[in-house]
Picture (cartoon, rainbow over the protein chains, first blue to last red):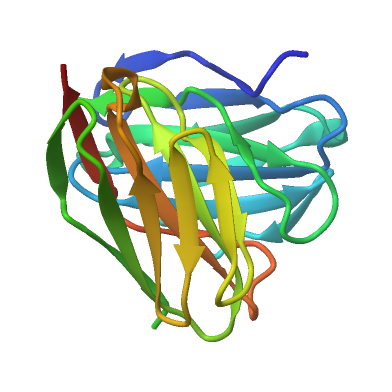
Length: 114
Length: 111
């Protein structure tokens, strides 16, 4: 069974440009999470989808970040316009329905804004 | 404020030298505590979930324990392939969604 897939694995963009990250969760997992690790800091929660609905987006840094999950399958995270401080590794994770279920993480997308 | 700290920041062990990693947490009601392993360039890989004080779980050379304020990850007779960053994370009872991660402990096991 395929795990959580993220792409691209790396992205280097200039400040002010737009970048879209994609996450394909494990098939059948209704929960989908986005996290971010900024250099030297711990992994931080960004938002949580249950199917196509945003359950909690309190971790989103600002309105330059837009996440979508059309049809409750894959998800995209768009950063527009990107700023230098957006650099980091963006992780996606998915889990099946039910509390206290462990989340399975993708390999992450390393975003560098120059 | 809910938070997680881990110690030490880095640990270097000789192969076969057992040790423990610490995770201290402050959370408004613990729903679950998770241990993950992360290898360079990869996402966190789930190891254990602990739910209540006194609970213990084992997997190969790893054993996780939980008290009301901290968790320990014991590594018995480690091998070089156990080298990785070990992450602790907690989920508060007040939050179905958020998992709060600690900064991690970077473990190196020298042959």
